[in-house]
Picture 1 (cartoon, rainbow, N blue to C red):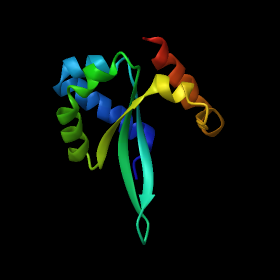
Picture 2: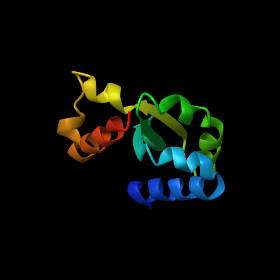
Picture 3: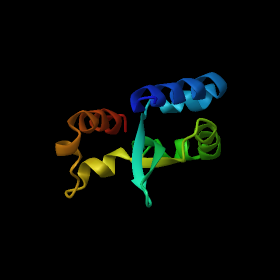
Picture 4: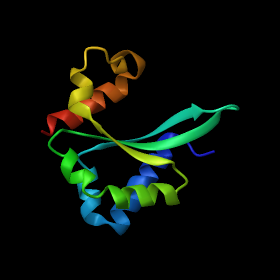
Length: 113
């Protein structure tokens, strides 16, 4: 089984190799594999989560078909685009307690606005 961090790095590497312009956009984003379990019996589903600043979001989403095709070819379910700035401002968010490293990385992404 491939770990999530290795899978996300491989995804970014493939995007940069075959679509260099899109890869440049991902340099300003945080890419993470999100694992979810659903159904009976629980089936593991893996998504690519692309956390971007509000300013970068429209530019990255313009290439969503390419990003989703690559994710599907790697055996991932879907690509999800998340606004890092909104997640950090959300008062109900538990990211800081659940994953402090992700919380710090989201600050880095949000600062690029």
